[in-house]
Image 1 (cartoon, one colour):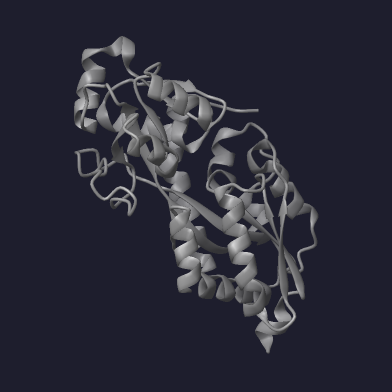
Image 2: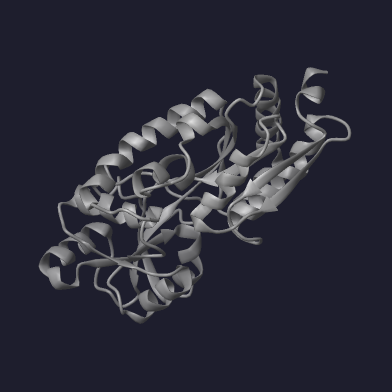
Length: 305
């Protein structure tokens, strides 16, 4: 009974990106299942508030009442990187947000053009050292997680790799396939079609384990770079001051949904690995990720407005 009354009969999940992307599909899959799990007559809707790399959606959460009716589904940049990258992020997760739960992880990969001589990450690093004028990697955007994974790899491998920032994935993938850049980093799912078509070659993934989609591609840790490890993840947040009973009810419904076979199957199509956790475990993860990325970003000198 407590679960049925803790959350308003209609709740919303705000997403800071447009309809049709991975995080939007994830939000809709979860909303469809969480509503009934909260109790009879409960509905959860998804609102897209794209722009400013998720900052507009975060501002929507802060403008809403802290009554358990509004939640934010966000990528790692919102609760972690925003405080390290932006001069004025407009919010502080430690002060303004309450953790609700982790949803799923996704992986990043390192790839080269199909004609590149390197067949492994170690060979690519050796090639970078032998050809410093060509030691570069592209990412979908400056200040993105792929950008910082490239810096993390360069630091772990002891080589200076110049970053080339693109405006989104399509231009990056086109230039990589065409050989205009030596290497690139983005999500493994974005690379997959070109990799399968033989237009690019994925050399390594950044996760702790190999991905289900690329079982034959070793991780960077397996290739001798244990510090170049990490993943992206999506998490759910409420406004600070939201009743603990509402957060607990939403967390229970979320974790139940993430364990359902139909939800797992849909997430697998999106190359997402469900990872249900308590709100406390999500906050511990957030703090650990800040400590991991702070020195990397600080050393780069990168700041965004």
